[in-house]
Image 1 (cartoon, helix red, strand yellow):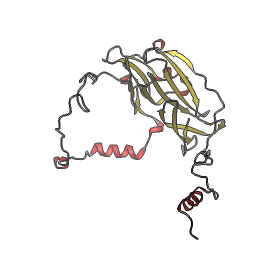
Image 2 (cartoon, rainbow, N blue to C red):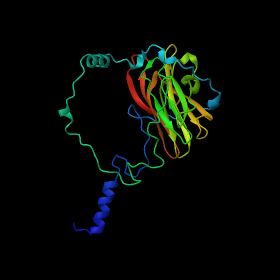
Image 3 (spheres, helix red, strand yellow):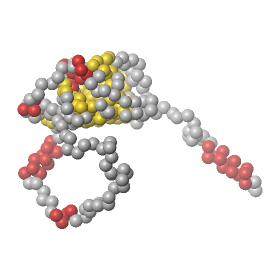
Image 4 (spheres, rainbow, N blue to C red):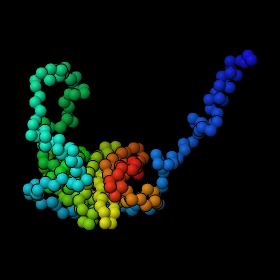
Length: 280
């Protein structure tokens, strides 16, 4: 049957957008369900508390002499054996293996990418970061604001002037408000949100007997890391209002115009078996 082109196009469009048991391309998004993705709204209101960095006790120097201990959750026998093997028999890298590397001698444009500008950091202006304090890896991260530098790691946090002076270090568990019963903090991360002028820091604690898994999120109230902060605590054993037997590890932190989202990899308390990823 012959049909006008416009009618044929309309029928084709109707055929493409017909439901026939499948969601149409422009239907509202469907809430994912099942083991591959489920949305569970939280019902417990997280109320922050406030503290001033300047009120926290300073960490005494000298803890670098503490014996190094590999954390249980970071133990990996195969990797450790490979490291020891490489240390005993270091691989030899010949100069012939570097022949494919070519130094780029093209001069950078004046004031352009790769060139030095008044905002470039001062060369050679290094200073001490966080203290290792007996744990390996120390996993330091850093956030640079307009007034000072904030760093966080597995044991402590520091605030330093941008020229390296006036360094103040405090215990990480004290900064994040983690009670002594939860032990040391883990995998602390920090960022500086240049759009809103705020520092953000995230860490977690985890343990058994009884089982617990908490994320601690700290947000500065101004662009000065030495000033006041908000502190939030999240129970990561819960998926919304549903209690689980899982704990959160390998946290990530993301920012947008109107949201702060952190992620975790969820593992079972018994056997440390991976279960799923979670965003909150």
